[in-house]
Amino acid sequence: MRMSNKTADRIATAVFYFFAFLIIAVLASLIGFILYRGLGQISWHFLTSPPETFKTGGGIGPQLFNSLFLLVLTMIITVPLGIGAGIYMAEYSRPGRFTDFIRLVVEVLSSFPSIVVGLFGLLVFVQYFDLKFSLLAGALALTVFNLPLMVRITEQGIRGVPREQKEAGLALGLTRWHTITKVLLPVSLPTILTGTILAAGRVFGEAAALLFTAGMSSPRLDFTDWNPLSPVSPLNPLRPAETLAVHIWKINSEGVAPDAAQIAAGASAVLILTVLLFNLGSRWLGRFLYRKLTASR
Amino acid sequence: MALSTQSAPGARAEEHAGTDALSADNLSVFYGDKEAVKKVSLRFAKGSVNALIGPSGCGKSTFLRSLNRMNDTIPDARMTGSIWFDGADINAPGTDVVSLRQRIGMVWQKPNPFYKSIYENIAFGPRYHGVKKKRELDEIVESCLRRTALWEETKDRLHQSALSLSGGQQQRLCIARTLSVEPEVLLMDEPASALDPVSTSKIEELISELKQEYCIVIVTHNMAQAARVSDKTAFFYMGNLIEHNDTNIIFTNPENKQTDDYISGRFG
Image (cartoon, rainbow over all chains, first blue to last red; front, side, top):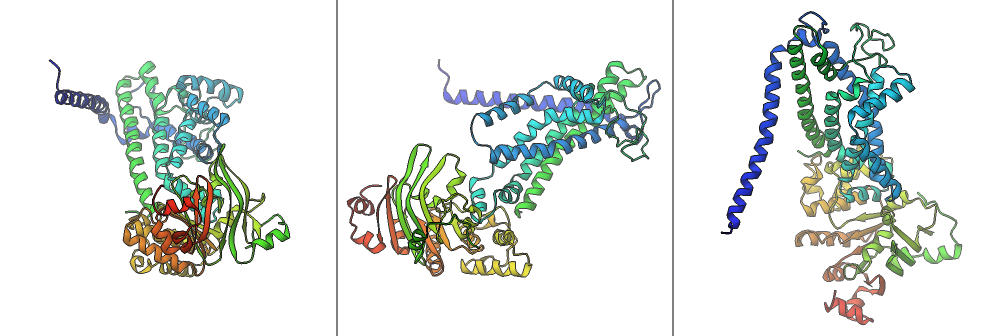
């Protein structure tokens, strides 16, 4: 007997619901498990004190700082380059082979495995340019795989603005540059910003690309020394820096402290909470900016 | 603010100055290989309203968009022939397209206010062109809104988003925005076709008032509208200019049979 359309529709609906709930369940249990194991470890002491190699009671202070500082460094390099290239792709490039080629390169770059980017960073930044294992080398490696994302986000953001907006700007006798910066960018800024923060979340959680670039150790840091040229200053971009994600990987694979498992659990919880914060924050900020810039309520 | 020009052949420029605000001479527009406008010559007098009519795809909008070089934004569009404005050919290389566009304003079919406040929509252009004092900007905003009969409706909500206005109000705001940079010519591409009848009649009243000061070129699909608002009408068909004459002659006693067929609704 042939199934009636109505029955088929009901079954299909049920299947889609099932998959949707499956995904939510996997995500919820993953986050729940990590938080359940890790939240108990988090304390002010844990977040601020340096790790211990052989004793219990180590913290993740320097690693947390390294992750945040590396993120800032990466974004300082990525955001202007990415927005500039995105504006070029959306507004200045003429359709043709060259533009198609750039787009292909961007796509290929963004699909590179991060461990390969890390090895590339080791060869080029760490060894050839002699940056050694350093925050700067790490930031440059992260730029390699963050940049394509930024370019695409900016291009899509600007292309998403209705064409008539651009023509209206030009028709008032505005230059192209002024039209782009004062008419198109404000409208697309929330999109660009949201994308940027999501990209930042990815940078924050990245480990593989940093193993061979930013390094797996952190020198003894003096948090009272804010001179970026001093080797013990946290702000020195040329010092090696183990990030939170790398730290989790390291203590899980070779940690000898008796409480290594607990430390890893706590650090994972901090990492996942921060990335969640980025996600929620980007939505809120995007909406807030859109209202502010477009005078809408 | 003079247009930077290549020294145009004197006699030619003289001939095209006079009472014409704008005139096209043998203008062709191509999209790739397709000739969308074919060797059109048209003259628009100062202080007149000129309707461009014709079936969809006849080239009238393309022609309109070439008058302020808006077609430059379309990658494979190119033009031949000349457009005379203020004694110079705006198609000549070296033309300052940016200041040209300030002097030849444009209004689109779909209202396209900036995603900014009502006030900012109007203050934006003048501020860019050098008006910095708040008091002067306030005056410009008020006078532009008054001229488009929007002041009473918006004076208490100037800092709300322009997108909170109705479609008809948005379109009048777009006209006000165009007036804010003091153009000499207004190009309108079916400015009322997306609006309700009440808003349409407001726009038409506005056009009749504005023609005291501006040369207006308006593309329309609405025969009755062309007959109501315009002094001269040009009929386009398949990229060719078929007939151009006083509006009352076009609508009562056209010379060309195609024009007659079109305005009496036998095709198009």
